[in-house]
Image 1 (tube, helix red, strand yellow):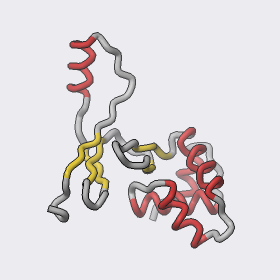
Image 2 (cartoon, rainbow, N blue to C red):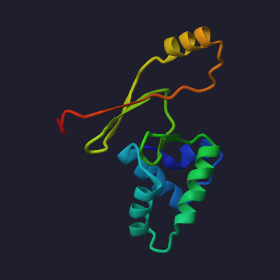
Image 3 (cartoon, rainbow, N blue to C red):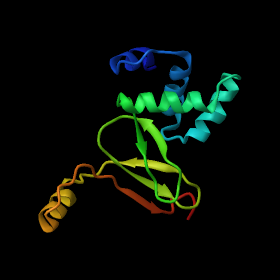
Image 4 (cartoon, helix red, strand yellow):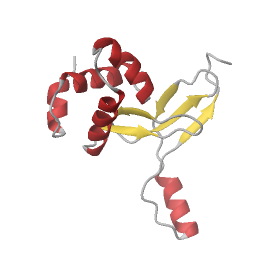
Length: 133
């Protein structure tokens, strides 16, 4: 079991019951949209508002505790911050998976060929997972 309280404190965040629940959901599910988080959170905290979810997500983003994953043609999802990685998304079931790829070669090639300084590189590969084929 992870010590979510200490993890939050390491990012200068107070360990409120709502934040602990958000962290637990992201740990269990990997990637979640704000809408999906809200659906789960409202069952646990009947008086929680969508604004509270947004406020906590934004604060966790600012403190690099979580990161936003922007997906083409989908709403953004959020995940706990971890080592640099890319994502695959199934076009049928919507399942998102992490993949470890070294994007340095692509970044270096584009930087050299186009005389362009890249500050951030994200890669999302879309297709159909083995369960949906």
